[in-house]
Length: 114
Image (tube, rainbow, N blue to C red; front, top):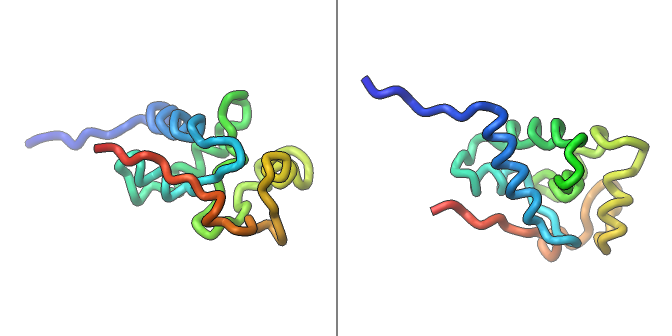
C-alpha cells in the first residue's frame, strides 16, 4: 500500500513564507489564495498558523496577508493596537473599520503551481 506523502509544518510554513515574500509593496493576498498556490486549497487555516508563527522572521511581510474579504483578521497578532493597519497604510492601502478599501484593486494572486 502506498503511503500518503505529508509535509512537516516547518516545510509547509517555509513554503508559505516563500510566497509571502513575493507579495509586492502596496498589495495584499489572502490565506486561501496562498493555500491554493501551494496546491493545498483546504489549508487556509494552516496558512494562518504559519503567518502567526512568522512574526520573528524579519523578511516575511505578514501584514500583507488578510482574509478573503479583505479584513485584517490577523491584526491581533501584531504588537500594538493598529500596527498591521499602520504598515498597510504606509504602503498606500486605505483601511476603514479593519477592512481594506478597494480590496480587489490591492489584491495580489500568487502564481499557481503547475
